[in-house]
Length: 381
Image (cartoon, rainbow, N blue to C red; front, side, top):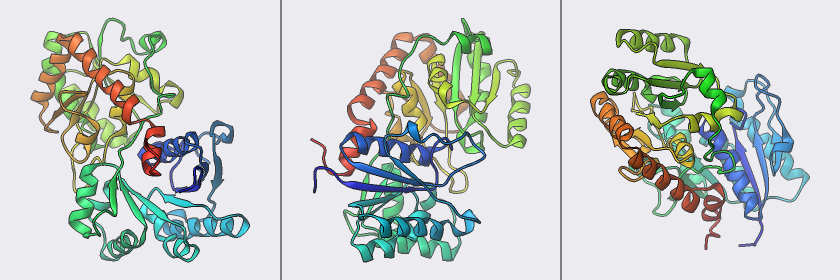
């Protein structure tokens, strides 16, 4: 394998669009560049978001333009890759961050003798799917060169449901960009904004949807407040207005409406400071109708800031949270155990600091994007 490779990443999502797929594409792209590779990232522009800044990225970006994206994304992305192949030297490797991107590239890569790697995050192999789409997925899984599962749970789901050749699926966990997430002490502006100075802060940073477990955290607050009355629960992220109203009603029913703050969208430039504002990061994710947490990159982001984390023991969360080492795992809907675990951390700041430090050290050792990029290309020491 050459010391430096030309690698193309084809991703539907890319920052500033939020979510794990966007972060994976950006993170592994930067990691591959740091390992000495020449990288191009194809992505779908999102005009409704902040203006895209090419100068921010250490690799070339290639927008994928096309109408009726959701219906024709497979073929729109194929056309973009095919056009660039006709214009310049072919890459040594193409990585598709979703199966819808990979599906249109299978025959193209085979005809050009380009290895094609597909990243599987979890939901695509756990949720119910129409028969025809499942056939397309099965065909894609069979025809790509290699499959990267972001957790052991995701790999197990692929192995159980699709029976692929041994060795075709590898586990490569999500990573963290430690240039973006790191400990800081200056959180005064956020303390003033949310009136948290001198208070214990619980944080969840995620889309506000049912499976993320915000409701379980709210139900845990009355027991915690008995011992720590100066308490704030920060819910960061956008969500469905109807569901957010349900959570606000739940907080009112539990008598903790003054302790629960919905921040809505958070500017990415402030995300690191929110993690540093928190005493503990909590996201008790659970499975709902096949929709599950394939990994949970926010647990790592919090650990990178030396914060202990608590996750729901479902899906691939156990790959992100090492129980008793970097945080705690709980049954996802057990608000009583959740309150006990949070109280343990609040009562024992030394333990909380040790779990956060363990998580931080684990990331520096194994879970930076640079380290994961080397594993992906087989160049780790």
